Amino acid sequence: MIQEAIIRYLRKHRQESLSPKAVLFDMDGVLYDSMRFHARAWHEVATLHQLTSRPEDFYMFEGRTGESTINELYQRTFQRDATAEEKQTIYKEKADLFNTYNDGAPMTGAAEVLKEVEASGLQRLVVTGSGQHSLIDKLNHTYPGHFNREKMVTAFDVKYGKPHPEPYLMGLQKAHVKPNEAFVVENAPMGVEAAVAANIFTIAVNTGPLPDQVLLDAGADLLYPDMENLAKDWKQIIELAKSTRLNEYSK
Image (cartoon, rainbow, N blue to C red; front, side, top):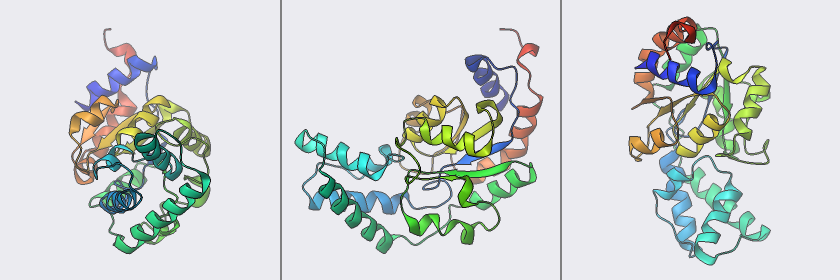
């Protein structure tokens, strides 16, 4: 399954091989078990402001910047963009609620994945749509030695959020690598779309309530049910990525 996915990627992108040098991680739902709190806070604030939403919407919206999410809700409800004041008010309310609910729990299996990635000699970067200082600042405490701010892409760094490829293209630039020299680990359909649009081999980990098919339809090259299973397969993924050459397989 892994090798087949690599061959499909190479054919699609007309690459002879992968040459892994970096892994770009989404944060919420990948490194932290925080999406349930984001979804709860967004839905409660949307309801307070009479904006049409369902809790599951925010798993679909995950990866967007806060402003983009608020605009989406205003377009859906009132057929207009939110004003600057509305965006500021709603995002602050949402952030305050999130910080109240969030327990800061790391995602089960994420530390194991990071250990495997480090053992593979690959760079570790974070590419997140989050503007939550509380989580960004907490990364080094939760996963000491794995990340530094200079090689992180957040909502503060980009003009366009996911599903636009800009966040992952910026991640490639910060890692000084080409698309076929990186992997992305994502849990959200919009994040998967962004990574695929940036031509990066994309591993989806379905840590939320969405059907697997949503992530596959978004273009994920590989799909795992959780980070623990990804950690178990990591050595094999790297070995096959380094050894698979497209010219060895008939087209």
